[in-house]
Length: 72
Image (cartoon, rainbow, N blue to C red):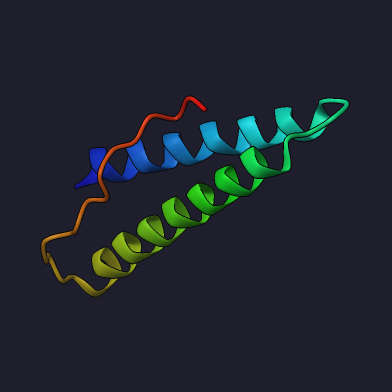
């Protein structure tokens, strides 16, 4: 479970960097930004869910969201 959590955190950091890059561009693509932000929130929610399970000591199965390409 720990490796899965680290992978989610890494993906979320990658998405955050892409959001920052898009915002730094002279003409940011609003649709791409919106999609990246939704993806970042999804990762955040999954990370928080897993951390809550670990904090409570419940070792339940965690539903994994299908892997999608991070490329636009």
